[in-house]
Image (cartoon, rainbow, N blue to C red):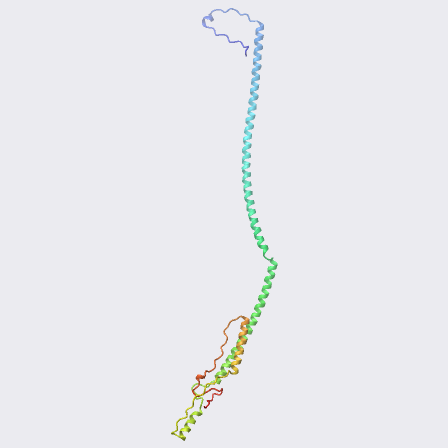
Length: 260
């Protein structure tokens, strides 16, 4: 636009009233002005086209930027979902690993025990052994009850025999002594009565009943030790002490007094 013609100055009122001198415009000047205008128009069109291209490029870049922002937002949401899923998966894997470790410990402890078949066989064997022990115990209890009944019977019989061998209370074991004293007084009333000195006490030998009772008690005690059943040993009846006898008498197994 360096070749453009500067605009003409405006005319004042005085100048408008004055007639202008006629100027001659040649055809060459008109052509030059026309060419200058066409050049300026072409330059303007070129600048407009450049601006349009720049605007289109900027619009495409802005749209691309918006698309990238939306894509980044979508990727961000997808990444958040992936992170959440991975977190859940990690928790599940940790739980699975913990349970697997616990299962391995339990399985190791279970493997230390015998199998179900072996345990069943052992239980069956123990049941059979327990049944055998119970049967043997019942038999032993029956035998023990029979021995106890026999022992009670023997004790009762021995006690009965002892009661039969003892003199009755209040009876005089020497019925002939009164008659002897009465006859002596009749023969010589002035004579002194015959006083008998007591004979030394003779140890009473153990009877066959005591020996038999002791043997039965020993057999019963041996049976009780084998069965490990503690029950009191039957006590034999004590012999009649010698001090219960009257003075001047000595037991010789017959109950008759011995004169000194």
